[in-house]
Image 1 (tube, rainbow, N blue to C red):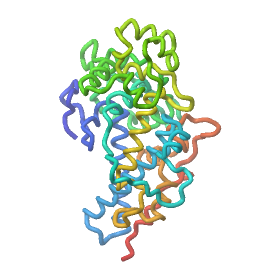
Image 2: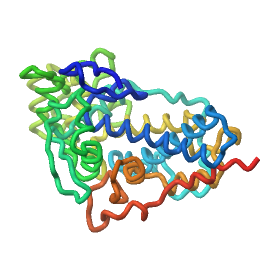
Image 3: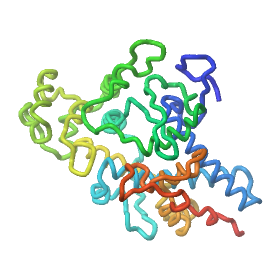
Length: 368
């Protein structure tokens, strides 16, 4: 560990991971540590079953397996909540019933990040952030509640009073905030406040970032997505409420001046999703090109030199889940609901970890 940038005290511990933002907030730190621990857990198992492998082979194979697990979780467990499973199937982002490889790699597609996605559409989900983080015991009894702004760049909470497990369970048990146009005050008034009374405004930062990147306006993106093109403010009523249209009219002189970050966040959600039609269009495009433009995507089997075997792919499909990551990489987490991104319910009950599917790493035993 090292000293954290932005920490309020010199002795604040600081974690090192692949993402420089690892210490930005406690929940992000927990997730980064979970992924790091998962890599090491996989590597330890590979080293045990393949004692003749050198360190580089172990590292690269563990990295490849972890990437497959992450992609499986992201596409088949996480994104459907935001974008709707039917929309993802229709737009060929996922293939839920696939028994074989999905060879959809297209060398003519660049698997890059769309500015409209990174600086507007995906940042809309900052609305889901809770300002109060609750920590839970294994019994799911809440034992502590913290203000997000008090623990920015202060990951020491993970090392206090079972904070690591408490925050991890909280990620799966505390509900997210509503997906709407409103943002918690902890990120609009107190972001990175440190020892000051007030801090930054994440929503204002999002808007300014999109301006700095020079992305197209809201109307132009509606046109790109094949949606209706408003000629004046009154034409916005197909996707927006009258109240929001009046608010936009009080801020922007012309309908063409509406910024994508603002206009997209005020649209009524498409049924079964957490976004309006413009942001949905952008995000479906983003995660399509992320998939088909990547020849290393885990479901691709065309290049046998880099592909998983079919049995390996099947176990990644069956055994990868956020719940499994919590179980395998918590300190003393023994129970979890199977769908960890969804709240506990009669259809999603908490079960012992040993009842959850897992990735069978013995399929990577080298018999040569």
